[in-house]
Length: 331
Ligand code: KG4
Ligand code: ZN
Image (tube, rainbow, N blue to C red):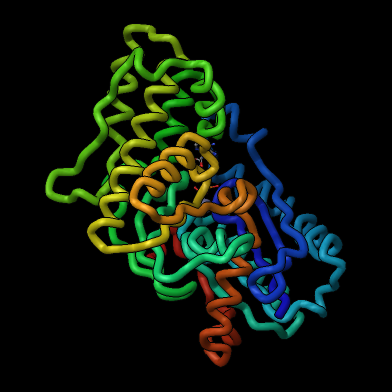
């Protein structure tokens, strides 16, 4: 089954053709970092406008690279939330137009569902597993019983981990997105030159919180520390928090496999920290390749494939004209 996956919930315009939820025939990503970096964050209106310009080109390129034509596609999958409303609408309207004109089913996909199944694209994931989604908009732990049976165990009470990376990078004048910039600078820093408290949420040991850490970084900056040391100490504190809560969830709920996903899962310190902690207790830790960690159409096509296989006769897949974007969609 060939699925065209379309994702435009934030600042990347992306489309992919994936066969049977596993074989990626193409995965085209048009990044908008150039326009947003000078503002130190995403400007929603600019993102929507750029999506409109990019999306026909990205979809055409996805088909060409896959060696397919629109008529070969069996279904279209599109992110319908959560995300920036205007940005989501560009993807949804395009997907509706294609599905209607080509008389194909349209499968609405939750953005986080895409991140959760992304690791499945390149390796065999075991179920049930514990999946940590760490992105610019989300930081949550999920019990994943199958590619479509997912339950949230905990989430952040304030900022997402990626958002904290982006905000700290902005304070340091490192541009956007901040995660890769902080990771790069942290390599030459000494984390021991500064200490930040690993954030805890009273009465909710599995919950995350990063806004206090962000404030602590801002306060520390008043003493003009070395930016590399600050980056290293900040990154190491975020990693400690993510690892600690993930391993606590493993112990509490008894998982034997951990998956980390979302943009922050590109971070090598996080991968190392998680792998070492997993090794200590004898569990596997897996993550997608970097291109499938950050936003991409392939993960949306894969999630769409599993949703379709679960219930191919779902009337929603054919009656999609009223499908709408939902900025704060629940999983
Ligand atoms: O999953 P994603 O592409 O978009 C959302 O759904 O939010 O994640 C983007 C986030 C940004 O906050 C970015 O700074 C962060 O992922 N990120 C990283 C790294 N690469 C991307 N954070 C830390 N280290 C990285 N190497
Ligand atoms: Zn994302």
